[in-house]
Structures are given as C-alpha cells and as structure tokens.
Length: 436
Image 1 (cartoon, rainbow, N blue to C red):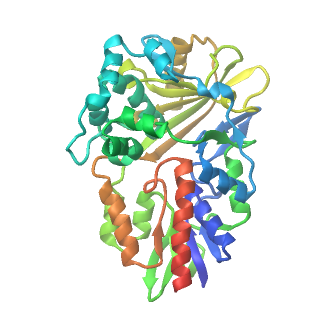
Image 2 (tube, rainbow, N blue to C red):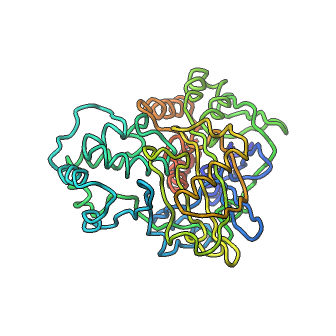
Image 3 (cartoon, one colour):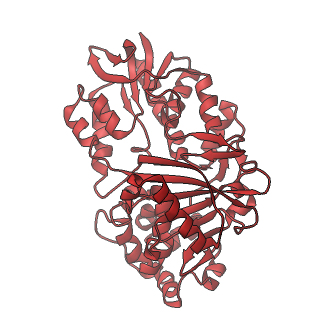
C-alpha cells in the first residue's frame, strides 16, 4: 500500500507530490495522458519556443523558494515587459505605471479620470457579493471598467466581468474595500495594488518546470484513474493498469474530472463539481518580422472595441531565445467566456480573423502562422456564488479523512496560485499521515 496517490500531474499535483516525496512519503502520481504537465505545454518549432498554455509565472517569495528547493533556476522577464498596451479607437495606448502618467494618459477621458479620483468617497457596498463589473463600475466608473479592468480580466480568466465574483475571482481587491473602505486608500497603505512578485519563465520554456518535478517522482502516465473508493481506513484506486491501495489520495484533476472520480464517495458532490464552467480559449502562435511591433509585453483588446482577439503577447520580447534571428513571436488569444463559439471555428477562419485584426491594430502586412491550440475547457470561472464549491470541497475532505482536493478551481487560476497552495495541501496530508 502506497502512502499517497496523487491523481493528475498538472502543476498542482506535481507540486504536492514533490513536497510529500521530499518528506519521505511514498507517492505515486497517476496521469491519463502520455505526458505530465496538464495545460503547461511547450513546443519547439522552426527555432521558436511556443507556450501552448500559461506563458508566464508571477513569482513571489514563496514561489521563488519552491523553485530554489526544487533546484531550478528561473529566467526573469525583460525590462520591456513592463510596457503594456491597451487598444483603443485604432491605436495602442501604454498602460499608465504611475499616478502622474495616469493623469496624462489618453486611455481615459477627463470625466473618466475624475470619476476614478472620486473613488475614496464611495461608500462600501452592503451586498454580500457582487460581480466584478458591479463592483468596479460602482467604485471607479464604467470607463475604467471597460478599458482597464475588463481587458485585464480577459487576460487572466478569459472571463466575463458581469458573471465573475469580485469576492472569489479577485479577492485581494474585494478585501481592500472591506478592510480600508477604499481601493485607493488601501493601495496607498499597502504600497501596492497589483500582484506581488516578478514575471518568470525558464530557459527552454515553462515545461522545464514540469520535467524537473516529474524527474524526481513516480509518475505513471497513460494510466487513467477510473474510480476512487473508500474502504475502512484506506482508499482503493481503480485505474486502467490495475487496482492500487493508498493511505491518502490527493485529487488534483479539473473539477469535472474530480467529480467523476469521486462519484462513489459523494454523488451529490460529483454533480455539483460538474457544474463549474471552464472558459474555452484558442491560442495562436505567429511570426512577424523583427521591428514590426512596438517594444513591450503585448496588448489587450477591450470587448467594447468590437474585436475578436482578447489580446496579443510579444513573446519574444518578454524572454530571450524565443524566436530565431530577425523574427518576433506573437501569442494571440481568442475566445473566453465572452466569445466561446470561436473555439469551434475551422483553423483557416481563425487565422483569417487574426490576420485581419493584426493588420488593423499593428499595421502588419505579413504574418506567418506557426501553431493553433484549442483549449475547450481552459480556465475555471469563479462566478457569483462560487463559494458553494469551496465549501463543498472543504466538507468533502472533512467527511472523508485522507481525501484531499486541489487544483486551480479551488485556490486560484494561476501557476503561482497552484504552487503556493501545494505547500499548504502537502502539510495537511503530512499531518493526516503522521496522526494515522
């Protein structure tokens, strides 16, 4: 009997498994695909390094410590990556990085700026939960929502601000109002509003992290888990390659897969988890001639501008070695919760949409397409009422000692969120096993 069975080898599962393995526990990771990593996938093609999933990681102190312990050296984003653009009325406008640049920026009208500056005078809401759109428009105005917040949410969640919960999707912002009565006052007192840390990747791409972690673990690929059952003080794992017994089980699969696996433990929980919506995303990689794009991280496209692209990353400007000499690498995103049908389009139609909009926005005449990836279930959406899923996960663990749930549908959608959560989940597993 193994100590811990980890179902799913995305960054959440691998990180938890790595922590527990370092503590001396026998850990076995089950993965249904032929390679570990989940949606962290890197492809090398024609001299380009293409990230099919997450492009960057926002590494704070805890993430940096994890990487150091794992013996992997990150690559930090270039200074150019600090320059970010928003597309507005036919041109790219750089996102203001200071209060003075905000006041001078043409991104918002004079009325829009005045409305933002009135934010400290806005009373906190008495509603227990609001959508991001409700919250931002109430505190900062519609213009700020349309041209700054909504595009940012498209970049992080590929989400719809009218459906996402401010309490669960952007908890830090929600807590600023609760703790300080004002976002501006809170940001001044905390000396920050955005996420802490530095943007990183790894030489050779993000899959380097997956390779490093999995190289020290027992990862059983192409061994899909079909069912998890509890029997006395242990768990029985029915998998493609046989039956296994474990003292503890960590389910790090996406919500719907987790629900399916747990149907014999809790049918009601299985049905609930199946309701969590994942927004679809199309990722297109393209090459353009060097010098044909401005310096920077890339640009976001507000939905109010009527384009199909959510945004474009200038990938070869963010990290070195991502493109051959004389070429730039673009990573283009479409779809999301506001435009889900695009994921079903034929390749050529998607390419024509992208080419048309790149020409309109960047004035580029020649685009070479390198790759197209469809993620039909890409990012879980922390919608209004999402707290019921978090409560359900907690109850499920309490009622089934030795069962632990993790993943980006519980602890945050970013790679950094998953890494941070893995430490806490592993500690809970360790406490259970040492008390057993």
